[in-house]
Length: 281
Image (tube, rainbow, N blue to C red; front, side):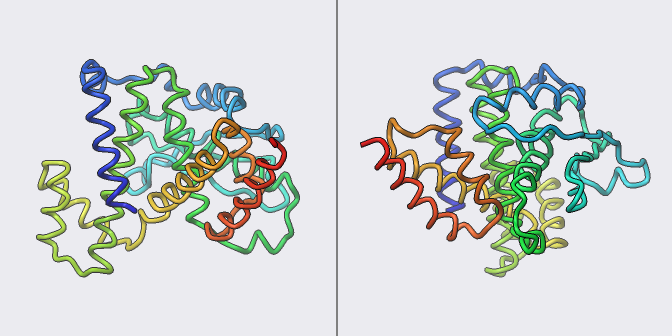
């Protein structure tokens, strides 16, 4: 699944560049129109409503990672709120990273990512036992899926948005493939670095990636595999429903089920598709 996705998205990137060579120059000097986190959150709250269902109105506080932790934390993170107080949410931004590139990260952590999905699910008053269950593949898969979607909401050229999405899927799958190669297939350091360097052409960076994967086994799999699983579900629905496929309805189906194993979601998807086909006949 991962290898195939890498191949498909590299081909897609080549097709985009062939169709629009200017994308490469735009990529070298990319700047998202919106760069202030609070402004991005406000924009996305309304922009996502075209393809995603509405959620209850909640508060979102943007905080910044303390200087002592900036070196060790990711660009941003969403803090899951208390079970009985999902109305108050916090996203932490790490100023160690370039805020000019923060738009898709805010989408991943905020709308329509973790914050949005969490609020939607809690707003349905799920059975309390579901708050004890952890499906990180669903959670991070959803956030990664909508992050790729957000490039088309950011105000940049559509071809550039498509290229960036494909490029990031390749990078994510490359990390996941190396992760599995090290910890399951037993690849040596030299073999792993050679694999990574083939993609990025930088030995020092490849060694840094190798060290990261070595320290935290499985860290990239929920993002990459979760994203690919969601895309498979979407492609299945698109294929079966054809012209009757509506993206917003599909997103609502995924959100209504909430965090679960993908095999379970796939079973429910078959019933959802059958109901839609029956209703359209």
